[in-house]
Image (cartoon, rainbow, N blue to C red; front, side, top):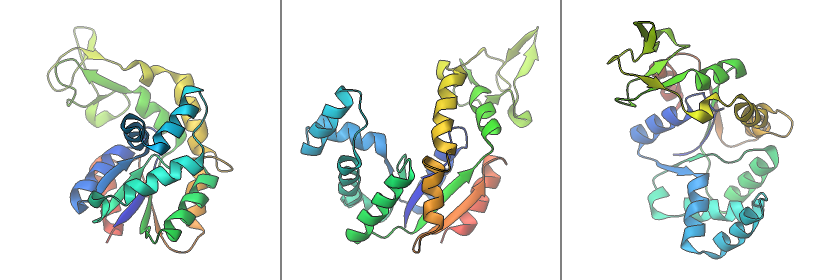
Length: 225
């Protein structure tokens, strides 16, 4: 089972991807990790990519896509893969799709975790981390896991510990830039999603990312073979 997964920051894409990976035993392939591996390993593609990165330029698709194809041909991907983080726009989607076909690598599913932009932003900015245990879920915008108030302070709902925020979770400008790219239906990531909805081959599965994690994964699994 070979899968592309899409979803804006805050949609729970990473969580759902991990659930898919565990249930079906597919290999998680993340585009950023492919770059790091090629660059640290000194591959020819990695050297070419590093030249662009060092100049602060985007790595061209004719370098990125061969890297991805090489990764998808490795032994641990023979039983299936879940590609996350690429493509990010329609041109990349078209080029990747063509390259997969030419390499006789079948794309079975395209998974889209849909979420309203404001909800996605609230989810990112509402996250709170417990200083005692990062696995204690706390979120100021989700009633089921909302922190509690104790002696005039908002504390962890599980252990009463102090809560902190990640700096990048509170950077509205940075969040906005990432979402501008994702939600752009003309040239951005949503354009890539829509491309796959209009080509023969992969089955496109769209699920609402707003409900609780379990409900989202249940609906998602119902569509996967």
